[in-house]
Length: 357
Image 1: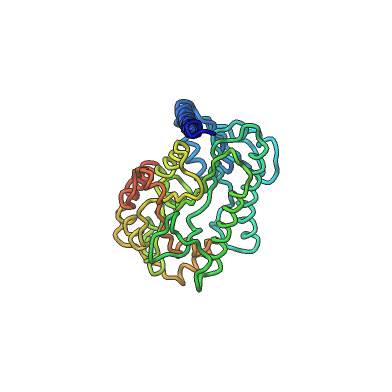
Image 2: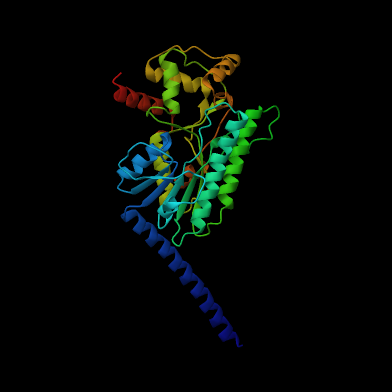
């Protein structure tokens, strides 16, 4: 082959690759534009719980078609389809042609970690994730995006530095870590392994390593913490230096909406405020927002006794979670409530408005 012909072939090859890449990029942009101009079909397994209702209400208010999969649930303005979370059944048809699936299914961890509860906590997460993965793998028109709940608890107990997606250290290797902490971390790891092992090559996947979502709605974490403050018990927990990772409900739903619109997000993503703070400061800001200057502190032994009566675990309070949303920040996502002080004031205002107090 002559040099001129060789050069011409090479130029043609490069040009073809460039135009193919441009076409793919333009096609992706066209698809994103078309998705932003029409209502989305969103399916939320486990969406009848506290967090699921917040998310469904937000997506529904934007004109999207929302379907919740639930064992049972209240009557909502969106369809609630029955499923048992363990068998492929008629519910799987709801996933056909859906734009987004957001799996929030999982038994509450707010319980004593008995043998039976541990089994249910693990199976309710890993089992439902594997089931949804199997359902998606059989679809002719699978969803473009599958977001699956995970947890910021997957990172180690951290007082020394922040944990982002790129450099954060997963837990279980800490010396002297309580057994309950190791259990929670192992659940999180197996949960994510099941998620990413699912064979869904045409579906983008995001594991939501979420911090505690603070909402003024009844029954959530904020509601419980505010109850302590209202009764004068909202002092520091333990030695008070352990970090609290949190996110305001408005930023949580906005972040998930952001993931839908931005296809560069994939894999594990931290969903948390950029400013975790020590427990002592966290509770002080909440007391100030409510108007109580003094809160009775709780020592470790008091928390252990209280946890037994409340049928929960002290890990939810004493483990230091210093998680930050590295990917969200570098992408340009703007938090409405990056600081806990303003978030607490906003949530207290919402709570007072709802309860007339």
